[in-house]
Image (cartoon, rainbow, N blue to C red; front, side):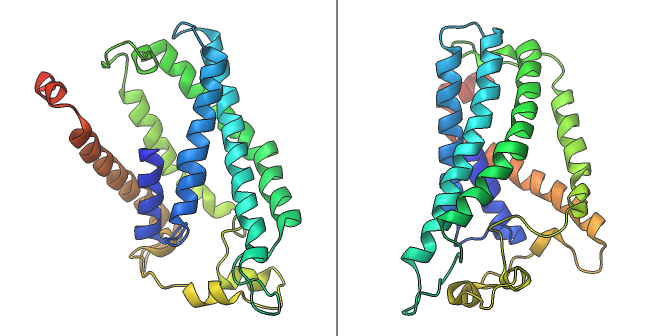
Length: 252
């Protein structure tokens, strides 16, 4: 919950991604619904099993898939009910322009068939690695300690950061993440007044992960490493503040 909320906040504040006005909804979907659903399913499947049990791995894989799909379902509902709740006198939507009949399939199909399986594969791979090398991280009764080669995790994070420019190959924008320009490209004959009024109200210092007078690839790479540093720094601060005094003294 804390980690994803910090990431979403940094994306909105520094990169203008996700948006500050939708920050609460994004945190609810991705930092509350997603982890709680996933953890509940994981606990049901892996109940009373050893840390290295295959049931733990199955629970993590199934839980991650259904959690992502559940979050997309909630987001689809949030999009789809907006035209009925927020509209002008003549019924023109003020914000999201599509009802449930469009929003739900648009959100669910991609997550059921593409994003969900990818999430399950990545989660399964990471969890299997933790079972082999860092099992104390998934044992509730075990003290946390460094095991195995922690540099492999840092190396994997670096590879993901270097690979971020691959996102430039994707055309268009994700469904629901529209600005006024994207809505025009969708063929709407109007721009919702609420979106038009609030567009660009927050001057993000690095909008769209770009840097002035730098190419898109360099901008993506720099943004990735800046984002990692910001997220890591904030989580370290929060983690330090949240540690019980006796834990901090023992660690020192």
